Length: 235
Image (cartoon, rainbow, N blue to C red; front, side, top):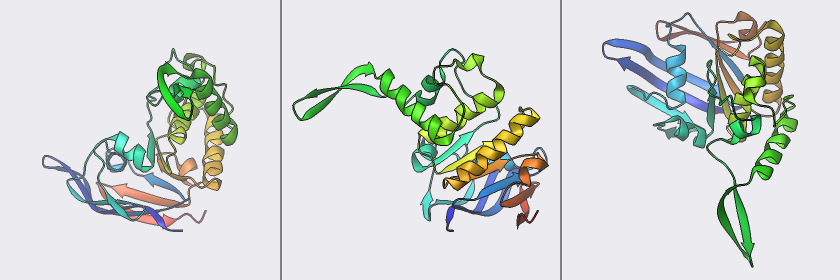
């Protein structure tokens, strides 16, 4: 395996406070990496730099071996890095498929001779079919026509994951994914994460949950903004 993400001497300061200090990290393509640590250790700050929410004070970030600078999550997603936050960003009144395509809707096309013209109308039928195929591909047990407000927390989380997969990200960052789930949903999530790995996805999990951390390929521990261990999981 080759590194898909590398952080070199990554440092983030907020005034005189150093949230991340000289972070060196290499995430291999196709692995599941857990990042653990106490509240305030710097886990989420690090992931927010990988996702373009924050920019490093010092250091360098590489994606697929190339230096990158993400000034927004849009930049990160376009490069191939997606993030699912602990607090979901879904519209309750919209359907599953409408939430998944929101912001990158598909326009209807009019064919005239050999030319296709984009019309100022959304192709709902086509969007729904693409999302339905995506749900079946990943076996996510969702109905594309269900309203978000009618779904369980676990189902809403699956919608958030599919939003990123629809955008064809190669790295999926999950921020405290088990914090809002019941035990059965945690087991289902762990199974889905390993399904994603088998399909070539790289998954980074920020977590306090020992149960899910012990299902990762490697476990990285952060304390006071520094990496104190980064080891292969032998459990």
